[in-house]
Image (cartoon, rainbow, N blue to C red; front, side, top):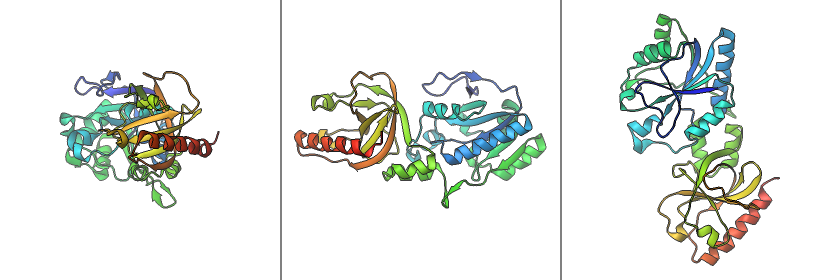
Length: 315
């Protein structure tokens, strides 16, 4: 899979060195979306895209955005985050598409009209000859565009537009909104059913305040986790697919923490992970975050959490 940012303003994704391209000089089958979480509904869409691309002798393209459009248009409405850009690229690279293309979403791009997006960007710059979209797709300035407009423009220019049906599991439409809600409720075991795997993140280990080491439970503090969809509390986790662990997500009220952080105590591990990106899978919600009356009370509870995690996590 090749990953690019479509060069609309000479800028790549914020804080990322993803190469810029002016256009794709091939005919493509394309789908568009935020793809947060890349759940089974997304995978269904991408598998259909690949099948149609092969049948039509086209290259398959997933078009997405950085950052999330609401971060620019209405930050107060920005949903919690299921995957960051690196995790999204990692998952998509395993799904067999030919290209992942990002568009840097900024104020200028938000003013692009729907017809201009279809004609100038999808058709001319990205070579779209087949467009597969979800049932609720909206696009263009103030979300003015809908599927019927895309079909009209496609008929005029020479590309086909197909609307995918909602993907359901047990009468639930699989969506990022559903997964966010379940995670906020601590229902990580249910989320597995809609993702097709345990919910996981891969983030960089950064220097913390060192309190864990002082009380006998050194933790890996993970960067950029303040906007995760997880319920605040303690989880049984698997780290790097081989180590058992206990993770705390929240404000660390015993120590008067000011912002949400994710800290992971890795069982039976010795070494320094600082600066490395590690994978953490969330297996079971163990308990709510709580303010303890003393450090000793906290230590006793962590010991119980560790023993429970040992029992809960299958080898």
